[in-house]
Length: 138
Image 1 (cartoon, rainbow, N blue to C red):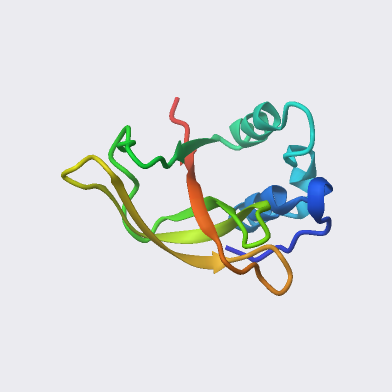
Image 2 (cartoon, rainbow, N blue to C red):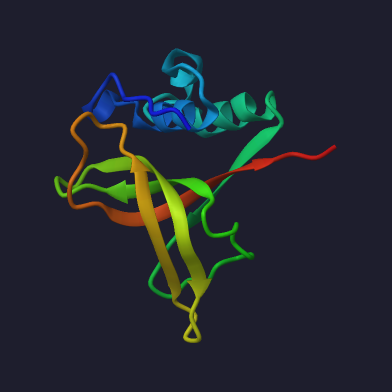
């Protein structure tokens, strides 16, 4: 992973492309069309990744939700969807420490932030989703 920092902020921010570029070790310009403020960004992201034999899947954490499948192994890199202390949506690159469903069905997740694309970093991150990049097999 090569850290790439976002170049735009606020409603026009490009933290998602910066995280993708970091994981894929490409330039932010190559993935900027995937920015969340663009219409159809999710489809654009999937199309961009599919050309590289990849796809992304998002797990949204809820208080009563359970994980829909066995999670990738501990140590895997992922993108964490979060809300900053300023109540703004944001994403960061993280390494999975543990993701598991507890006996009561509540998800337990621990991770280490590896790269925050916001120069200077964000504070007060509250996780609301975790996204993994997977490989397509033909």
